Amino acid sequence: MTYEEELLHFENRLTKQSFYKEQLDMSAQKIESDLKDYNYIDRHRQLEEKHEVIYKNIKKLHTELKTKVTKALKHLEL
Image (cartoon, rainbow, N blue to C red; front, side, top):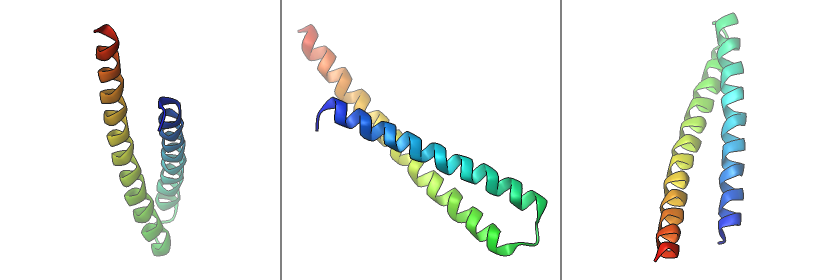
């Protein structure tokens, strides 16, 4: 996979994470306005879990990309 492809993949993950964050924020507002809707509370928990998984995935991808770029830069300096 080229750097460009990896960066596009990373960008797509960031977009997905942003979408889930917005959904999570809207869900939190819905829960605050209607605490009796238990189905929505379950949906909110699912969104929290999905957001957490995506966030961890983004951190991992970021670390991998940073490592690859650092190695490539060191190689170019030699």
